[in-house]
Amino acid sequence: MLYSGFVMNAKPNLPNEIFWGKEYSWRMDSKVNGWLALAAVISSLTDIIFAHTVKQWPMEARVGIVLAEFLALALWARSVTQWIRGMDELHRRIMTSVMLAAVGATFFFMLLWHCLNRAGLFDVLFGKPKAGGWDIGTVCHGFLLFVLFYGIAQAICNRRYK
Amino acid sequence: MKNKLRELRAAREWSQSDLADRLGVSRQTVNAIETEKYDPSLPLAFKVAKLFKQSIEEIFEAEG
Image (cartoon, rainbow over all chains, first blue to last red; front, side, top):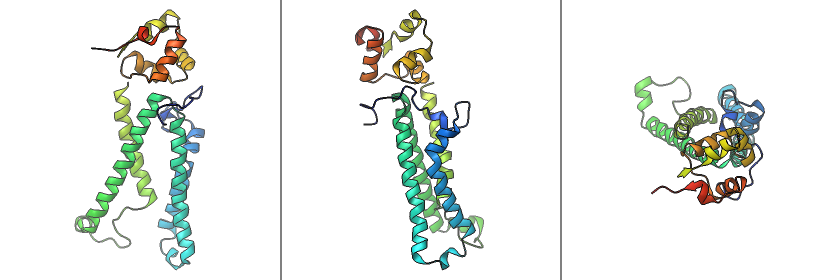
């Protein structure tokens, strides 16, 4: 359905509308990435500000926070899909590849990091941390990695068609 | 795939943006088709053919 049978807008969406540059649109960026920003804010609050107090909260509140974070992520995935569907066929193809590569690379990197951390590599390399650990499992970490891999994948895919 | 899109567009004195607006695609897509870096889908090829009032075979030519 992504490639056929979709009636295109008069002005199709462009990938650079949410990337810094002359085509950047704050309105489109907030429409596409608003839910991701909310998920990142919730994650930051729970991980940084409430790191010590959140464990004393009732279980329902803690589960609620985690679910709110992942609900925001699900809504972000929905808005990204809608944004990609509004592109023309070339950009839809590029963005589908870019998103797949960025999500896959982020997942792979976080899994690899987690396994290496569990094996104790980072404790040996950087020493034992005073609080928490070297694990990267928060939405903020995922978001930063995703942006990095998104940029790399977009540069590679765009070069093919320019 | 070879195509005559650039010649057809130039004959009508349209810019890539003009053609993109008429086809409902981005200027980059028109450029990618003209430079033969991207082969359009069948619905888009039909749209191009209809716009220039020619058959698909007259505009697009398979290589080999």
